[in-house]
Figure 1 (cartoon, rainbow, N blue to C red):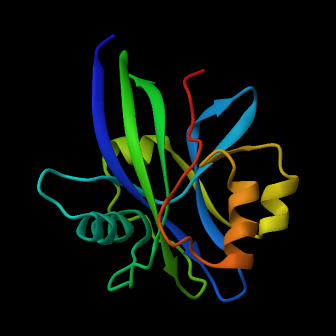
Figure 2 (figure 1 turned 45 degrees about the horizontal axis):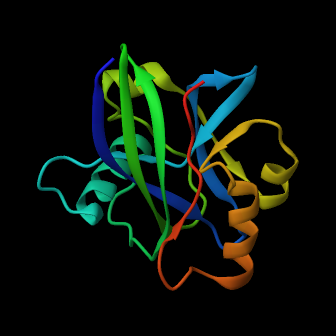
Length: 162
């Protein structure tokens, strides 16, 4: 297997009621569902802000959103099509009202992996046995809700290969 590196941007979409929107994707682990924050890979020469605006339009149908503070960074190591990929991830806060996602502009690969959306409360994430990325979202989210965004992005755990 060959190594391929990429950088992705992710959005922690947070409502005034403190709900967060997560995407369920294929790649279940140990019989548990896998949930991730919306976002995706940066294209060459694309700024993190432009990449996240594009990804949120493609995956959720959101336009003109205000991207807030960078919260967390992590790395995921995944295997796709026989290639080991190290994905460097950056998560940004996006404060929004609750909405119904419309995934009209996903790529074919994204559609293949996509299993649905769900709005979550922090206590639901903490009590759920599913897998969340970043890995410690059950602890990171209550810290964010209590203390606000960190002064500088915090390095957190991602997801390793099965």
